[in-house]
Image 1 (cartoon, rainbow, N blue to C red):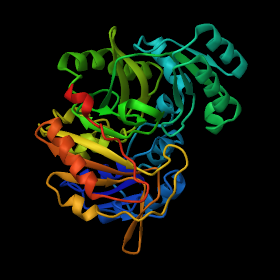
Image 2: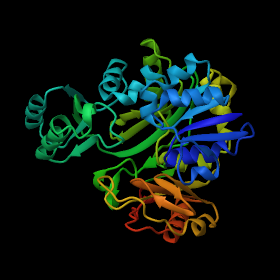
Image 3: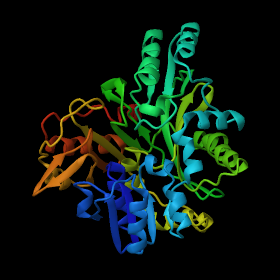
Length: 423
């Protein structure tokens, strides 16, 4: 099979790495790819959001399966266009992608189909939103309605922080049109887990659980990011808790979409808070999580291409069970100084070969580019340094051993990835 992967981050590198291991795979293309992906796939000068450019390439090159990484391409309707052209593609269509592209759509769907989640109110006027905050006080959560690259959520500890968030999102328009509407919701407490499933709208297969670290600094301090590291499995997700999440959150959501006339095919990611009142949904993503994918896929022994192909054509029932490595996996993100704000680029990265030589270590590239024989930084999250270990503690130690071999000017990483799991 000739396979096209769309995207350029650490998630896409992990997908390409896993796809390359499939007995079904003959050739991989990636658009646009990055400095690490080009060791496994032919990288294309086509942006992830250039749907018609990608479609033209897929037709011309007789691509057998396209796998979409980023949410923006899904929300633009890449799946609809490929399916119209009779091409196989893994991911939800534009309507289904609204589950992530519009938090208002998502919250209203959850309320209608009794999916447990935080109480919320929707606002399209900043003054009304601010008055509401003054009335309810803090803590509360302020969310931009649209896509904001994982940064459109502010967990406000004080009312003034929440009011500033409303100003930034709705009046200063830091996320553009994504902030035309906002949601203000109750602040849930507990531990957060990432639950990813693959579905063809009828059958559902859960992937291994994971836990992400959203804040930029140790001890969950600082701003929210796209994710500073992850580990799998998440010990807090016991078999009983997973069963409850599947029944009350995953199945109700997929069934609810079906009742709305929307068939969901692809990966569904639920960010779940394990509260004292049971699991509650924080958010849905309509694609593989990043960096969770980098911690989950190294543990998957089954053929990922077989699974994605079956889901894309509505035949997931043919996949009985998935086989998993019993070992734990930890991914530590190395970021540029200043991320998630402004950061420098074009810093040379050293030590990649030394890190990759360590046992059970894979270094996934996220924001990198190749320049001659050098690998340079080109993004906020630069690398996902990933290691397997017989226990989470072993995996943590091995991942940090690898991190210590790597260097670039201004490199920043959290020192406590996976520590929660040891408790």
